[in-house]
Image 1 (tube, rainbow, N blue to C red):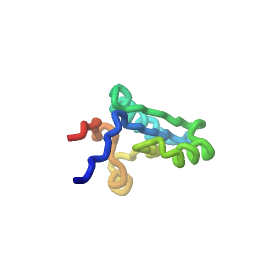
Image 2: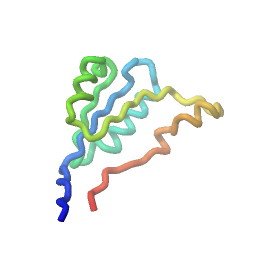
Image 3: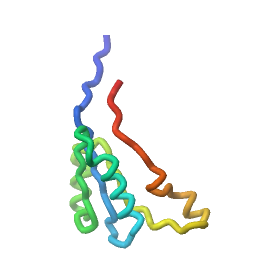
Image 4: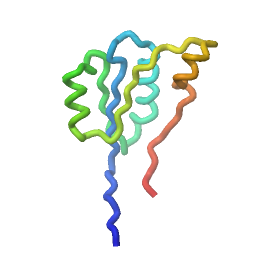
Length: 103
C-alpha cells in the first residue's frame, strides 16, 4: 500500500515585489497578495520588496528549496481600453484566492 505524502502545516510563500522600482501596478499587486495571504496562520509570507529583491538575494531564495510558492509581482500599471495590455494581465481587483486545506 502506498504511503501518503506528509502535508506541511505551513505554506511558505515568497513574494517578490517591484524589483525594478518603477512599476506602480506591481506595488498594487504586491499589496493584494499580502492582503490575501498575510493574515492566514497557515501561510508564512516572506516579502522581497524593491531593493531587497536583488539578484544575489533572489538567487539564494530561489535555490534554497524553502518556498512552496514564489509570486513575482512585476506587473506594470494597466492602460484602460488597451486590449493588448489588458489581455496580458488581470487587474488585482479581479483576483481572489485563499489557501485551501488538503482533503
